[in-house]
Length: 199
Image 1 (cartoon, rainbow, N blue to C red):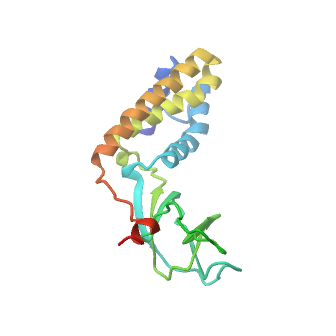
Image 2 (cartoon, rainbow, N blue to C red; image 1 turned 90 degrees about the horizontal axis):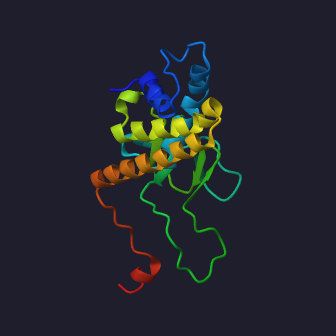
């Protein structure tokens, strides 16, 4: 399995830059990698629903409640990068002809979920995966490409290399998404109010 340095060197190689031995090397490549690696990792994990990064949790309600609008609030896990699902609610089009209040079953405000759902609140979310041994191989390649694209200006000052890196990233991302989609069981959305009214 790849290490952080191996992934960084994959990105550097794509730019034609010299490889590093460690993140602590005293050179421009190492400083650029060290400053960008965690930021770009989190951004890429958040950008898509990567199956290897999906986690489930049951949250206890906080003792403090929202000032108005909802009855309970729950704090997101510290490793949460993106909320995917709350209980069994799916957000879809609202078919009501008249509304005098919000129809949202929950609201995400800061690092808290506001809702009327009682505890425990079940959620699915994208987690910050620091352990590279758990990364999917296609994610590793997509991430290395994005890291190269993000470092291109700093290391090459070449718009051509920067554009080529972003193009390679889009191709790697397409492969990663296709391979990930094959592994997922199709999920049917629940019927909306228009359909339910005809049953």
